[in-house]
Amino acid sequence: MKIQNFANVLRLVARLSYKARRALLSIVVGTVLYNMHLERTGRRRLNWLTSTFHAAVFLMRKTARLLFLRLFGVESDHPYWNGLEEIVIGTVGFFAKLSNVEGIRKIVTPIAKVLRHVHHASGHLTMTQMDLGLGKNENDAVWMTLEKGQMPTDENMAIVLYFHGGGYCFGTADMYAGAHTRLLSLMKEQNIKAGILSIEYPLAPEAKFPVPLEWSIRAYDVVVTQLNICPSRIIIAGDSAGGGLACRSALHAHELSSLTKGIKTVRPLAGMVLISPWVNHSCDSDSHRENSHVDYLSGCHASHEVSREIMHSFSEAYCEDVESALTDPHISLLHLPSLSGLPPTMVTVGKKEVFRDDILQFCEKAMSEKVCILDNCLSSAFDA
Image (cartoon, rainbow, N blue to C red; front, side, top):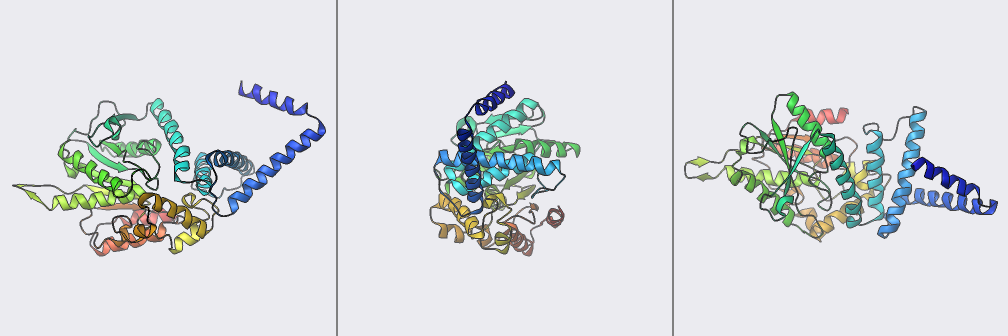
């Protein structure tokens, strides 16, 4: 049916007069050239309709370019992404240059929903909405397992308490269904029975700091006190902004483990996983300057100035005052007076991302305070 509709469009164009076809070609060429101009220039704040239109044009351009490169065996700009990831992530990065944080959420949320339905329909991942009493009823969290019937209350099961990324402004608890499926499959291969409890924390700008942070800490408390899950079975994890929430929640867990209730001492966490965590909102490191043109977070092909403006728009949406985000230790974790007490931690960072130097500085600070950081993960990431 779609092929037939395309053929009908071609026949309609063929019936146009020569002048009409030239005018149509001029419009198409002009639109593509302007789209390329938008890709290479500074930040714009276009309305939702215009941003979506140019994102669609960018998507078609990227798809055509990728097919051309693959046809002639030429490597893409991002050899560590597959074709679909390069197209989707590149489009989101381009859209970030044209719109505000609410606009980015409008384009990311539908993509996440589609991906969730795809993975749910495949039967590889079982997802269950959970009410933790946090305030969103059954939408407080999503419980993910490879097998039906498995619940977090199973004492033989490891629990990954996950906080998704998205600059505190967009994203959903189930947006990484594909990645979570691969993670659980790898753990199963190691004979580890595990499930992922991904928290649906409230997003900025509707929920300003410290609401998302307080929500994350409360989620941990509920899991431990109401679901009666021993902290020694919990691995706290998160990516990007979610990495910041995970780290602060882990420090909260350490504070609890240091307290004695009667004769019972709360046990420490099993561990923590931080995936490209956002630990410094200044955006002034060398890696921000070097990698702003390849990292989708900063709008691929953007200058450092544009990159910093995009990132600061998320900081401003989260806490209104960018200066507060730069100095508050609960937002920029590099300014925390101490990281002592964090559980054994795995940190991943890529050599071509804007967060690289901030993450490495965070790891150095943690290791200087006797935190166990799996540094082999850092080296393997750089070898990728």
